[in-house]
Each structure stands twice: as C-alpha cells, then as structure tokens.
Image (tube, rainbow, N blue to C red; front, top):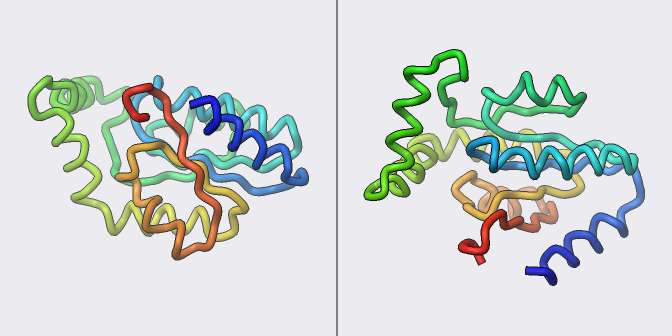
Length: 157
C-alpha cells in the first residue's frame, strides 16, 4: 500500500501548480472525507481540485470552498431521512448488500460515465475510488487522462 501512496504523491508533487485534478468517489462520509482532505491540500498547493460525487454532498463542498461536480446515481438527501435510512439499510445488508451497491451504479452506468466524462474533459489527473463502478475505468482511455486509483480499506488491496 505504501508504494501506491508514494507513487500518487510523486505524481502530484511532480505537477506544476495550477493543474485541474478531479477526485471521483461515492459513498458515505467515510468515503468522501479522505478525498476532501486531499482536495484541500491540493488547493493549498495551488491546484484546482474538483470533487465529483453525489449531489447530496454539494453543500459540504461549497462550505469548504471546493469545486463540486455532481455524479449520478442520485441518492436521497440527508433531509429525506426515511428514504435515506431505507437505502442505507438495504446497501448494508450482510447478504445482498454488495449486489445492491453495484446495482445502484450499473442501472445508471451510461449516465455515470457521461457525468464523469464531462467533468474530466479538461482534467490533468482523475483520482478515483477503487471500486471502479463509477465509470472511471471506461473514462480513462477515452479521455487520455492519468487515472490512479485510491484505496480506503486494506480489503481493497
């Protein structure tokens, strides 16, 4: 894992400031917060980070002064507590939860791909979540953009 982190750091450190770097992720705050920390550090180093994730996180990004781009699928907002609780409960089920997560992305995969394609069009780097269901695997060759993956859990390695 260290070597992957070191490679990412080397790529970012080698970049002159002012690069547009898209950070694409999806999930809960535990998935989003690491990318926000990276984006804040990139911004402090003179880059232009863009967080590409679910619309539900727009307000959080705006509060931090981070550029935001919505990526489908749309999920219920935090003020729609009942709908959100139902979705989360289904996604966290020990049996079938993973399949429901994948189904959530796969049903909208062409739209997810289109969203990611649009935000990464002028990007110098596209940093993605390890899952790959966000359309980033398809976007990278089509866009000609560097696309390192990040891992938030050892289970991903």
